[in-house]
Length: 433
Image (cartoon, rainbow, N blue to C red; front, side, top):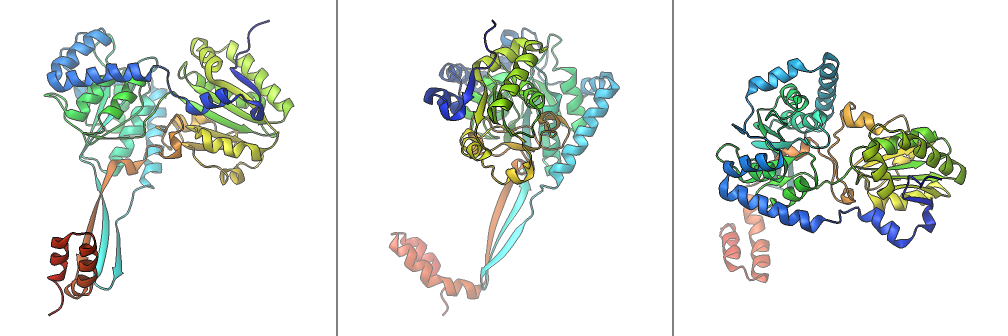
């Protein structure tokens, strides 16, 4: 008899404390080692600039680069070279992403807090952003769209894409094509922590940016966290994850498909289903076993499910919601009879798929929602990438002479109470004669 595919099964209520902790924590065991190596890479880029980046391309990518920047003609050629069906699908995805994110554009506000005192706030697009596109185990042109298109919709002045070079010294044709299609301004053949450091601090070839966005491996994620003294980043992200909540209305095969779709991203992906009732839970487990053993990316799927895969039985949907809030998944799929009603019960998820037909795959590519999302429980505090990530806000205040006179004494009193006597004098100077 073969070993079970899933790491955890049985009742959620019977899950051992250590197993529950592992599911909720979802952090890598080698985080400290990765952080140390990343720190050294960043230090070299800051000290040596382009020379370090060329050395890293030779060491990590096994390629001798003649230049870090990819000429625009190579992007255009890549766009012409990809299959027409892929180009049409990317164009459709870019159009939907633009539509969804245009609806999120923020508006300036202005309020009179008391007569003569007006406080305003204005969104200003960032001047320059960097979009990281992975190029290791898998290549994701869709992630280029998810970063570049919202930035362009926001009105960012310059959008720079970095992606690791392949054997020919260029990022993948798919990444280059997506950069051209999305309207990127520059592309660099740079990967890993070195790319993040270059974007954060700048080199002779790579300009410094205001914010870095986009998914990446453990080294990219660690690098983004280490450069926050110099640049803003999106939500820290790790291996992909999904939590499915399913009741008797769910098709076991559909639930299994969603778990496998996320498992094929990474051997450390976390794929969990909470299933109402013993018979449905068993059917989901059987479907997962069957699909996993014939998966085309079985070398990735089986380690993921064997390490952090779970189908856990619950007695009712009410049992699910506290776990959902604690787990705070990157992707949450509601495969329930009344998913729109259940959506109101959800707290802490990167993005929610309402109904089993709303496959996570649709959101990864074509709905227009962003697939750059917080992982490892950080959806408790972070949101997915949106057009709002590409603005900074300018706040201003206007005070009439009459309002200045009316505020002067109270401000002076408060400033005196805090021992800030120059503040008090500055306010009282505007008292009415």
